[in-house]
Length: 105
Image (tube, rainbow, N blue to C red; front, side, top):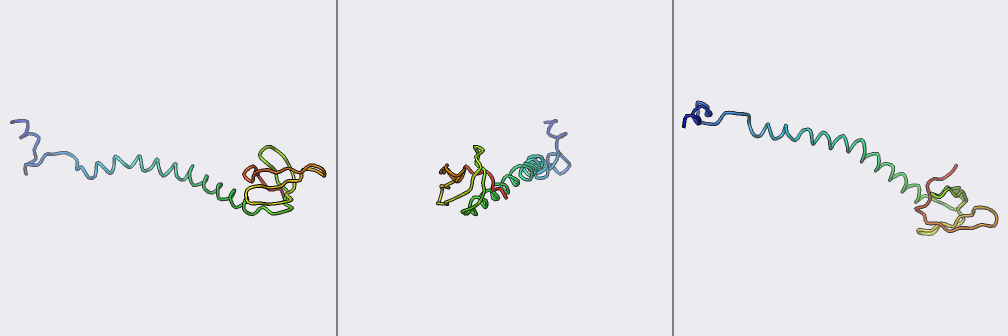
């Protein structure tokens, strides 16, 4: 019984830090880590993805492009998901739209 008397404040409530303030302070490092990861990893990746989607949707006949396999060519036909690509005078290839990595100027 003596241990309870020493652990209690004069009003009869236990002493120690407040539970509400301590719980929020314990979550602060996790919140900060999430914020840093969001601004350094997730947000730039979303921007790059948006640029890529815009590039793929704006492809037109006559654009010079480079595929992920390294082929350079000129677009001769654009369909929904397939591009017809002229590599040289005799070679015409069909490639998937997602295989295009960049548009040359």
